[in-house]
Image 1: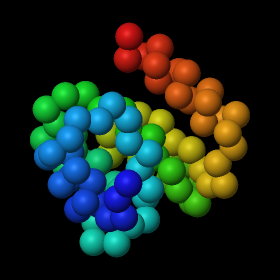
Image 2 (image 1 turned 180 degrees about the horizontal axis):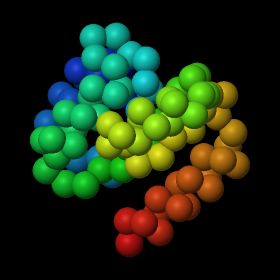
Image 3 (image 1 turned 60 degrees about the vertical axis):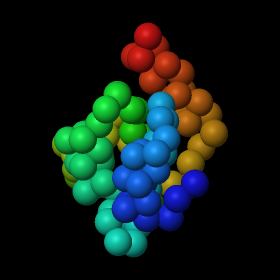
Image 4 (image 1 turned 45 degrees about the vertical axis):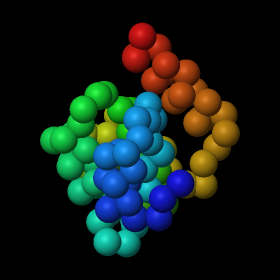
Length: 93
């Protein structure tokens, strides 16, 4: 829906979303900083799923420390994404 971290924040100012598939590497503001700002300013709880080509364990730790709920590396497996979304739906209830 958007291409930059700044656009993510603008979108959330104008629209309620329940789930963000957050790319880590974006222009203007990366997904890590966008997540930090979302967590500081959130009006309602939004689930943030990190999506990145970086598949190192340190990357997952960085994403989770920034406030993301889950982490998935690219290329994305549909089965893995479905599993995570099912897990998220149970956590939100």
